[in-house]
Length: 536
Image (cartoon, rainbow, N blue to C red):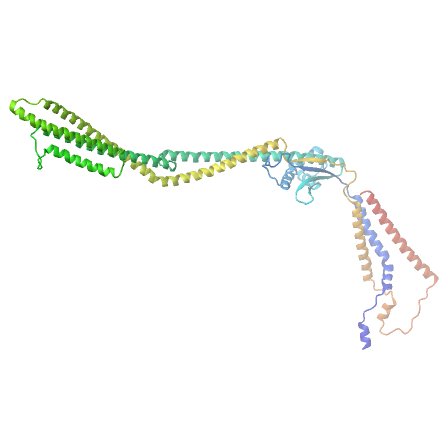
C-alpha cells in the first residue's frame, strides 16, 4: 500500500538534469541563434536605402470673424483634405511630377505609367495633426520617400505647393459655385414672386369694390346711399304733397268760376276740401312732432304747407264773399268782374307749376330707382366679400411664402457674394507651410537596428527549435536515473566511473569551447547590432 502511494508522489525538481541538457545542447542552440540572426542582419544590408523628406503645413483660420462674413463652402476640413488628396494623387498629376523630376528610372524604366503612379502613391504619406482634445485638425504633414534625399525633398516641395494652391482653387471654386447656385435659385424665386404678384393684381382688378380691404368703405358708401335714398323718398313725398296742393288750388280756382256749391253743413265745397286738407296736414304734423324736433326738414315743410293752405283758405273765403257781392252787382249792371282775367292767369301759372312738379316726381322716382340699384349692388358686394376674402387669402398665402423664400435667398446670396469676395482676396481659411521640406541626412529605411532585433528573436526561436528537436529525437541515456528506471529490479551495488587525465582534459576542452563559442556568438551579435545602430 505504501509502495502504491510512493508511485503516485510527484518527482522532485531535478535541476542537474536541466543543467546537463543546457551543456549538452548549447552548441546547437548557439548555431541556430547565430544562423537566424545572421540571415536577417545580412539581408538588412542588402536592402536599398530610402530617404524620407517631410514638411508641416498649418491650417490658418479665416482672418475675418465668422460673425461678419459666413463661409459658403464645406467646413469639414478632413473631407476637404481627402478631396484635395484624391485630386493631387490622381494619375495625371503624379505622372506630371514623375516626368518633371525623372522619377522611377524615367523614360528608360520598364514600369508602365500606371505602375509608376501606384508606386508613387505608396511613397507618399499624409498625416493629420489634431489639437490637444483631438477634435479639430490644426495642421497636417506630408512625407515622401525616395532613394535620393534631394529627390525626396524636391517631390515633397512639389506636393506642398500643390496642396496649398489646390486648396485656394478648391475653396474659390466651391464659393463661386455656391454663389451661382444661389443666383439661379434667386432668379427662380423672383419669377415665382412676380407670377404670384400678377395673380393678386389680376384678382384685385377683377373684383374692384368687393375686396375685403374695401369693406369699411363699402359700408360707408352703403350708409350714404341709404341716407340719400331716405332723402329722395322724403323729397318724393313732399313733391307728391305739392302736387296734391297744386291740384287742389287749380280745382279751387276753377270752382270759383263755377256756381258755388255748398256742403251739407252749409259751407262752400272748396272751403270744405281745404279744411279737410288742413286737418290731414295737421295730423301729419302731430305725428312727426312726436318723433322729431321742430328743426326737422319734414316738420318745417309741413308747417310751411299748413301756413300756405291756411292763407289760401282765407283768400278763398274772401274771394267767395267778394264774388257773391260782385255777382249780384254784375247781375244788376250786366258787366263782368275784371278779376276773372287775373284768376285765369293764376290758374295757368298753377298748371305750369303742376307740370314742373310732375317732372320733379319723375326725376325723384328715377333717382330712387338708381339709388336702390346702387344699394343692391353694394349689398351684393358685401355678401360676396367672405368668398373674396378666402380667395385673396389663398393667393396672399402663396405670395407670402414666395416673398419669404425670395427674401431668404436674397440674404443668402448677399452673404455668399461676400464670402466669395473674401475667398478671392485669400482672407479665408488657407494652408501655410511652417516647416519647409527637409533634406534627410539618414535613410528612413531599412531600419537595420530593428531588423537586427527581429533577427535576434528569430535566432532565439530557431535555436530553441533546433536544440529541442535534437533532444527529442535522441534516444541515448545520459543519467543514472534514466538507466535505473529501465531496469526491472533495484540496483544493489554501483561501479563508480573511472575518469583518467585524458578524459578530464577532453571534458575541460569541451567546456572551454562551448564558452568560447558563446562569447563569440554574443560578441558578433553585439558588434553587428552596433553597426546597424550607427547606420540607422
